[in-house]
Image (cartoon, rainbow, N blue to C red; front, top):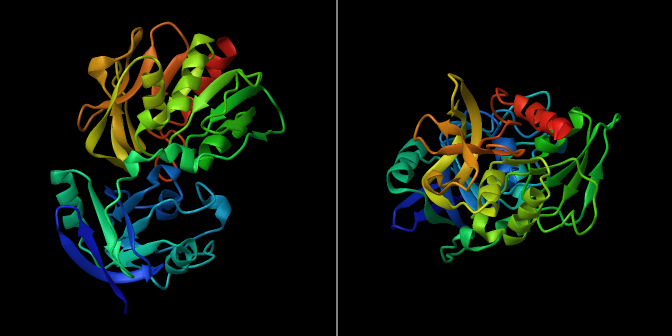
Length: 351
């Protein structure tokens, strides 16, 4: 059995069994605590540039299904680290094993690692740069210094039509998960899926509303997306930000963002709607947050994280601008907050 090393930037070195692609990679080492949906997580563009540690010990149990069940067309994680990789899975939707899939996607898997201890280290120290050394050594690489949004966005405008068209929605794809598009289509919205730097106003698209998607990396790198969101608010177009979209709208409105110590990556993040007794269990995947001490003028906090008190969404006091830091489309995870798509389209109808 081939072996490889995980080396963290503080010098910590761990050896595990190498599966998937037999290559060396470097990135930001982060951990996720969800029990299900490894295939959806790996194809989530928000994980671009990251080495993902799954804390749930058994990964690969149901293999990999058809591409239509993925959250994008390819794997975006640089590598994954698991406690125990299942090499003989069994599921009626399975098309291939996780090992074979990762190999075909050029993604190494390091198995046999104490992922609980590794997650505790990252939680205490904060996320770190790391590298999996298999074929050759390489330098540490900080993916947040690149414009990851530009790397994972679609290349050109795409138009998606449902059977019955009630709305025309612009989806600013900054690394969007596929179920955001599906959730809009199910609600009879024709979706203009736009690259991160596609200006719908200059291109004279007739939009009823704008949804800013999730995505990877430092939001401040996506300068052209921020400029587009600013135009959307100047036009008073109903504007809804999801995950990275929360941060981009806050920046466009004059607010600020900062990097979290180890981020939120799980399917059980408790999120409280401010002013109510409602606590939603949400899927999250982000390493940056909106700074509530520097909220834009006219905005107020909408949701807050029950674990650490960080911001989970903001809302304008008068205009139809609002954001959330979690994933209402789930996949994987709970569907407690799917109603937010209906809330958005209701604001689209009412202006």
